[in-house]
Length: 638
Image (spheres, rainbow, N blue to C red):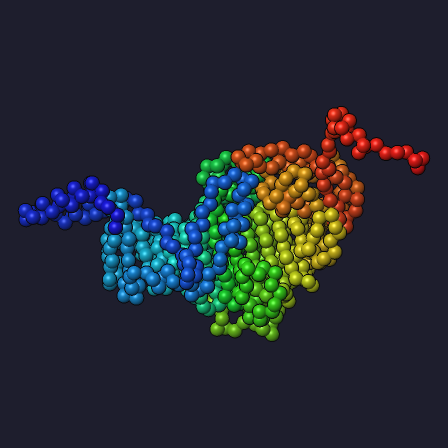
């Protein structure tokens, strides 16, 4: 307990005098004072998360860094962190000073004068039900809202009942559930959940009303881990008919709009903001603003790990994924039996582990997946896709005992023996997606297709990886459309023709438009390398324009340089024409700097084309005179 303030001390002294004199205060007066005290600041400290028996994970600290350095902080948050085991994560809960078995409910209320804690051994009092106090159970704390009105304790989970904003912290085997049909506004501010269920946007199975919807915000600077310790669930479940939007604290919604209306979400156009006005939080943006203005300078991290049969983020066993929208944050989604430590793993982990990193569970389909921003790392189970569909071999159809009772579950007949990846749209973000062996990085899983569906890239930076014999982007019978962005395919080298498996579609090619659209052309890779000439590394693209033959070409902006390189996918009509790339870079202070236009001409569509600026030097007369011997050659008549 912290030291009491002067006001609190005087009040306690006065109350003692009154009681000593034998006077009695009216009950209503005491209650009124209590209500006034609990109306003050109800904050609680963020919990520490244990990552091993010998050490505690250091607090993830992000500086308000300039744009040019931001990506380094993002990578450090994802790649530099250690994935704890379930047993290690449970240490914090096991070492808690109170016995959670014997205490039914704990209320923690903090005002400006003093810390006040109340424990209700047999349940929560009627007064507690009527006030918005922090509520803690089994190490999981929820702030905001009112118990039994905005959320309830089910005995194994905190279930969200209304759209009232709620913030969660703590380490627990409890889960967070969004009740069927509810529209929820949830913030994760430092949680580690390790129960059989961790976070679920429950499926609205009643058939009435709208589907369940969750706008999930990752609090800046925090690390959040969703790692089921048993069972067959996703780290973060959102199945068919439900909608999940993940964002950082820079809310990507138009001013005056609703988080619960997908039409109000700022959807990038051609790799730029594509919207004139203000954001939900008041940030002024324009149609041509770069996408990183919609990112927090210090985004939080969310890690979601799948159990067998499930996706890291998306569907459970035999469950199609819901509508998934990624607006911001550092997101890691890992399939069963996988880890960030071995991203290109090709050893067969068993047919039971067939969920996507992001998307469908085993024996299931992806539906609608949209990336508008964020730093994304997805890794599939062995037979799943990095982002897209789940494994679909009916000979290994997952048993009923592995299936979530809340899900709309597929059967071998309803899934048609062939899962689909669904419609995947990438408008922005820095996205690394890895298949584990038998599946595509973006698209279909082993034994799947993407018949009748489309994968569209309008902007952003993609770094897929797929195993030999599989594809980076696409699915059988589907479409792959590229109108922007930088896409470095598996094994691609700048300045070299690329002969690997690129795209899987109805003809295994990618185009700049859908079938039947005038001007539809096959696209080819053309690499721009500014790493040495301009000292550019992996950093945001500050502004973007592309010209082909002197005319502006509507090609969506990449979000980041990849080690100073941009892997563009241009229409075949660009062969033999002058390509002009106009970009800006960020200075260390966050201001932008003009870069000299890069002009190059692709000679063919092999993918070997390389735009590289030559550095010119002008030698002074003095230098020439002092080094005349270096520039003089005896003429021998040849």
